Image 1: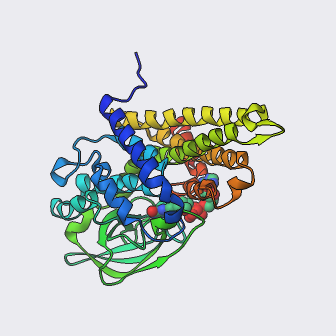
Image 2 (image 1 turned 90 degrees about the horizontal axis):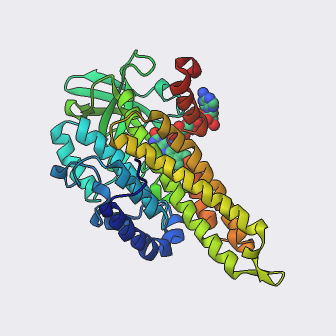
Image 3 (image 1 turned 60 degrees about the vertical axis):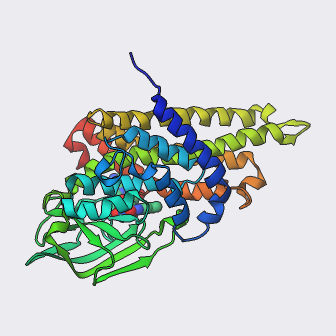
Length: 384
Ligand SMILES: Cc1cc2nc3c(=O)[nH]c(=O)nc-3n(C[C@H](O)[C@H](O)[C@H](O)COP(=O)(O)OP(=O)(O)OC[C@H]3O[C@@H](n4cnc5c(N)ncnc54)[C@H](O)[C@@H]3O)c2cc1C
C-alpha cells in the first residue's frame, strides 16, 4: 500500500504556517520584495515558528532527526505568502546541515544555533565568473599555510552575499583539476581580505544577491567543512535536498496565483457573464491546477526518498527543472486571467513571476538538471 498523506503533526504544522503565510506574510510581500533589504523581522518570526531548525540536531536548537518532507511543507506553504521569505528554511537547512554533519564541533556550535535562532544568515559560494553550470572547473584557490589556508578568488551570483555573516566557500588546492581537490571552507565574512558587492537581479531582491571577493583570506584549520578534496561530492549531496525544496517554493507561489485567478474569474464579468463561464478562461486554470498537483508530488516523492535513505539524485533533478517552469507558466496564466490588472504592480502576480524566474537558473538550469537525469539513466556517456 502507498499513502499520499502527511502525518497529523505535519498537517497541523502546515495549517499553522498557512495561517501565518496568509495573515502575516502575504499583505507585505510586494513591499518587502521591492527593496534589496533582508527581511529580518519575517526571518525571526520563522525562527519563532520553529521553521529554521527543521531536521537539525536538538543540541543546536533544531527539531532532531532529518525531516526533509516537513522542510518541503514549510517551504511550499510559506511561499504561498512570500516566496522570498520562504527561501530561508532551504538556505538554513543547506548550510546548517553541512556544518552540523561535516563541520568541526566547535565551529558548528558557534554558528548553527545562531542560524536556527534566525540571528544570522549564511551564504553558499560555488559560482564564479568563469564557472557556473560547470562548477567543477571553479578557480578559487585555497593555498595551504601554517595553521590553515589562504583563500583567493571571486564568487558571483551569491544569495545573501550582502547580508550573510558566514559563507561556505568552495575552493581548490593549487594545481588540482576537476572536482578533485575542491574543498568546502567556512569563511566568516568579516575576515580581513573579504569584499562584497551587490548585484541586483530582476527579482529576489531581499535575498541580497551579489559577489564575494577573497584576497589572501586566512582560514584556520578547524574551518574546513568535510574532508579536504571531497567538498564537491559533499555539495552535490546537499543539492539533492535543496532542489525539490526549491521546486516546492516555486509551486507555493504558483498555487497562490492560480487561487487568486480562480477567485477573480468568478467575480469579473465580460459579455454579461463571469469570465469563469468561458472555457477559454477556466480550462487553462484547470490545466495549471493539474500540473501543479503533479509537480508537487514529484517534489515530495523526492524528499521522501531522501528521508527514507533511497537514491534520489535523478528525482531531485526532475524536481528542479520541471516545477519552476510549471510554476512560471501558471503565474503567467494567472496574470493574463486578471487582464491589465494582472500586469500592474497593484497585484503581486508580476512580482511572483520575477521572483520565481530566479529559480530557472539558481541551483542549476533545466539543461543541467536534465544532464544529471540523463547521466543516471544512460551512464557517464550522457555527460560527455
Ligand atoms: C536567483 C539566483 C540565486 C543564486 N544563488 C546562488 C548561490 O547562493 N550560490 C551560488 O554559488 N550560485 C548561485 N547562483 C548561481 C547559479 O547557480 C548559476 O547561475 C547557475 O548554476 C548557472 O551558471 P552560470 O550563470 O555561470 O551559467 P552558465 O554555466 O554560463 O550557463 C549558461 C547557459 O548555458 C547552458 N549550459 C551550460 N552548460 C550546458 C550543457 N552542458 N548542456 C546544455 N546547456 C548548458 C546553461 O543551461 C545556461 O542556459 C544563483 C543564481 C540565481 C539566478
